Image (cartoon, rainbow, N blue to C red):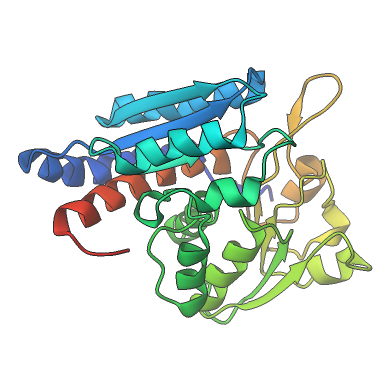
Length: 287
């Protein structure tokens, strides 16, 4: 029996519908949530990502700005731009589109975003709050994955979850969210020996390694729920995930497609975090 698909686009639409009431309530208080994207250079991929985020903002009724800088801009120029956005009353959320040019200190740049406007959830403060079990602004992709699991009615508590990938953007926060919900969590990485031994034990498998078709059918447990975070473009131009969809689909109970799975949820969570940041601003509470 083929696995049931996680329809990320449909779940994202439901998320926007729920956000509409919160956005309207803010509007009643004279607040329009605002999101600013900082984009460096002319990377077609980055431009597409930012354009999709801007479209989502407009569709949801948010204010949106894009600050575009040259790829060879100085670190001081970039920090000045972020500082301006930190002080802007129209902006409640700031994202710096990654990856950054190699001459820039990405760690310093990301930590310069005001904690209360860090809607990507990358600041050490927000990551630390997640470790402590009191999350405020949570990294968008892991947050979206949790909503997808809940939407499907998949039990998390007491299950064995395996996360393939240990990045600060997906892998680590993903593991922390699953731990907070009572899962037993194994985190694998590029140094893990016999990866299949671990993935085959997973009731819930999150693949976020950035390697096309890394996880194959014989590596997964029958009936497992599989969420594929990877987006990889093959030489011929086709987009594939970290999971070999064709061989895994017949063994899994649930599986997310690429594209159309996690991607729409990541954008929806970015909008949700921006609304949350605006609500905190109105309530004058510290994040």
